[in-house]
Amino acid sequence: RKEVEQDPGPFNVPEGATVAFNCTYSNSASQSFFWYRQDCRKEPKLLMSVYSSGNEDGRFTAQLNRASQYISLLIRDSKLSDSATYLCVVITVPNNAGNMLTFGGGTRLMVKP
Amino acid sequence: NAGVTQTPKFQVLKTGQSMTLQCAQDMNHEYMSWYRQDPGMGLRLIHYSVGAGITDQGEVPNGYNVSRSTTEDFPLRLLSAAPSQTSVYFCASRNPRDGYEKLFFGSGTQLSVL
Image 1 (cartoon, each protein chain N blue to C red):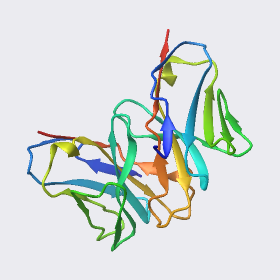
Image 2 (cartoon, rainbow over the protein chains, first blue to last red; image 1 turned 180 degrees about the horizontal axis):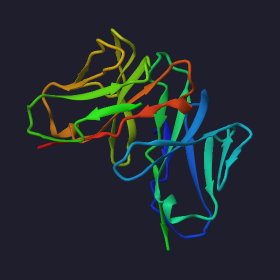
Image 3 (tube, chains in turn green, red; image 1 turned 45 degrees about the horizontal axis):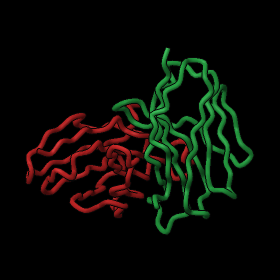
């Protein structure tokens, strides 16, 4: 089982739709969680952190469910510019300094006019 | 600030050739790392460094070497390229005193090994 799993999609939605992605993680010791956005052939960029109590940034809402070990990303009022791949990133206390980040495979979103 | 600069952006190699992917950052970050990204696999850590003179292996280190002689530079060497190393490579850096919200990626190197 992968440490961090995402539905690869693609999710094809019309403009204005609400869409939600889930990401499950296997290590219950995971401490921090992020959503990154990656445009085609570009580097990943931080979209938002995910806090225990849930958090919102404009049209984007992130939630964490520790009991079921998943995080979610909700996008309201989808825009064409939201078309991208969304990567789930989980940070676990490491046994070394570098290998803390585990990336999911990404979920591709395509917003259609 | 240029941030994290990777060169080249594209490279085609023949099996058995060697090459070096360059990564430089001008933010005085102690942590630097190399990832590879394959379709549907997410980013996987190849090697990382917590400071000049210190490097360690990540999840998929075989076939790659790194060195960190300066804080700014963290080159990734492919010793004898194989088709399995066809991938997109990203370098990243971070100040250990900052959270992961301040992880900076380079723009990537797309490598094809024929």
